[in-house]
Image 1 (tube, rainbow, N blue to C red):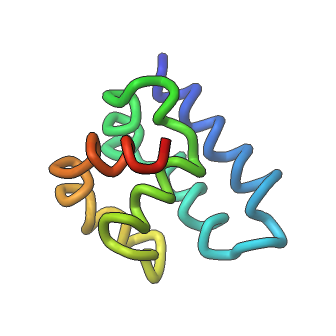
Image 2 (cartoon, rainbow, N blue to C red):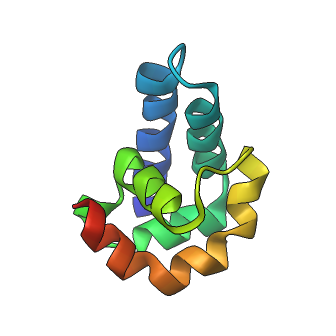
Length: 91
C-alpha cells in the first residue's frame, strides 16, 4: 500500500534527518506517519511531491510553521485547497 511506503519515508526522515536537528520537524514527521488522513492526502499527490522536505516547505509557505504536530491536522483543509500551487513553488 502506498500509504505504508509514505509513512516509512516520514519515520525515516524523523529518525535520520530531523532527530537532534529539529524537534518540531521530528514531531511533525512522526505525526504524519501515524495519521491516515495526511497519508491519504500525500498519496493523492504525484510521487515526487510526497517527500517530507517538500511537504513541510509547502506547509510553511501556506500556513507558516505549525506550533505542534496537532496543528498540522487543523490546517489540512487549507493545504488541500492550495496544494498544487504551493507544491509547484517548492519544486
